[in-house]
Amino acid sequence: MSECRVTKKYASGLILFDIIDEASYIGRITINNPTKRNAISRQMWFALSDLLDDCQLNYKTIRVLILTGEGQISFCSGADLSEKEGDGVDQTIPNIRIKLRSYPIPIIAKINGYCLGGGLALAMSTDIRIASSNACFSIPAVKLGLPCPKDIIERLINLIGESHAKMILYTGDRMSAEQAYSKGLIQYVCDNHDSLEKYVFDLARTISCNAPLSIQSIKLMIENKNDESAIKSAINTCLTSNDINEGRNAFREKREAKFQGC
Image 1 (cartoon, rainbow, N blue to C red):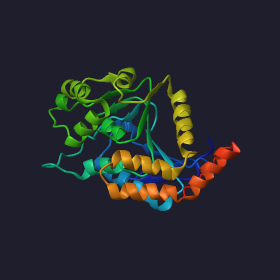
Image 2: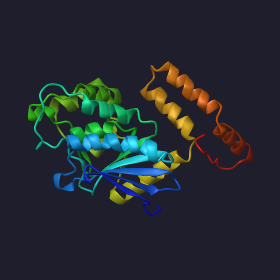
Image 3: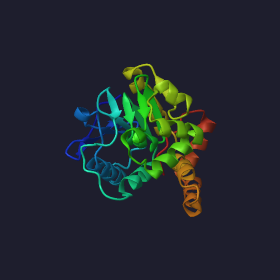
Image 4: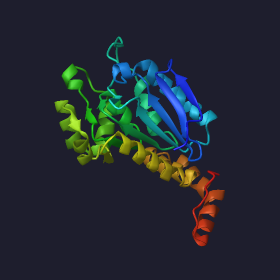
């Protein structure tokens, strides 16, 4: 892995962005609030939204994002409960989660330690979730007397099915990484932090070497399957791209394709 080329701070450094491998077009987002086990505040959610916009505008070469928490103790322990609760239903943060899910490039959650409540909602908003064996997961709303946001319930059901979702939501109990894997909540469990780092980086590099326009069209069809106009446009962009010719030529010449995303 090459050295980081750029580190940019958002929300006074509570959210960080860097390019961890420029040659492989891989960026990283870090929840950087370790004194609170990387709890996420409203300000941090807004900063995350700004970061996504910034990445699209100013770091257009990025093909994959890795989302993680600072340190090995916690990915994100949930909402910052020291914040004053607002009145009524606020759709701002659910809309940011939707923005994450529909973001045009793949996002991989690299999960160490605690992944609880809003932290699990954050992880569920990514495309792929990989965890270390020390990770634990829960949505403890029922243990705090809180309502669980509707978008989190719907996403959980979509990922693991209604029965598993009810078990998690009704009990509020914590799951180990192996239990989360058995339910399909995460896609792979690594033995330790070092193997997690390597596995996620290798996965991101594999994805980044594939045709970006093809990946974007696939993600669009998964996350926005009812937007027929956008899907048709994405497919047409793939079919008329230079990359489709590069893929065919590479196949005939028995070499690795070098896709440019155009």
